[in-house]
Length: 233
Image (cartoon, rainbow, N blue to C red):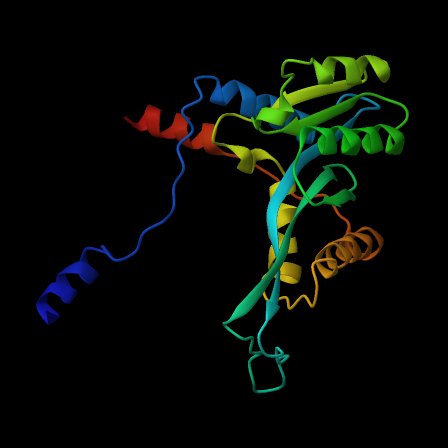
């Protein structure tokens, strides 16, 4: 075994290490990503670019025994056993220019709930063009009732819906903010009741907007890497 280990180290080969990879089969991947990158870095004059998505299945978990906060020289501890007190969905939008987040918690993720949230975005931004970057979830499309066409007509056709490539929702900057929410609010939480979860989430949004809101320095160099590899071949 020591000889095998030496050979692997010399070849810089670590077969036990794996990285998650998600391939997008979208034939228009490059075009769609390029358009989104252009919106992020060069939005049209006077326009707002909003990254919109839903964080579903947020579980209000109650720990069987109280959690212990970290202390000098001691890690925090939380109980493995838990009680499920209910789930919530968060509808959220991230303003790529300011970093401000607008969010609403709902017991479910329904088309009607998303429509209500989009109405709140229209009130938040009463003037100017709005570019909405979101993924390919079914309720993001027109559906049989043409809800988004009617919604847009009500608001002077100010909304432009821009879809991420298939299996590439990571292009949406709201996913970065969702990861912050998960790590800082949800991961080790102990919720005494179902209603405590939306209160904690909305409190984090208010604190973010007042003290921490900032645009993300988002870049994507996949096209450049691909071009370089193709050229080297």
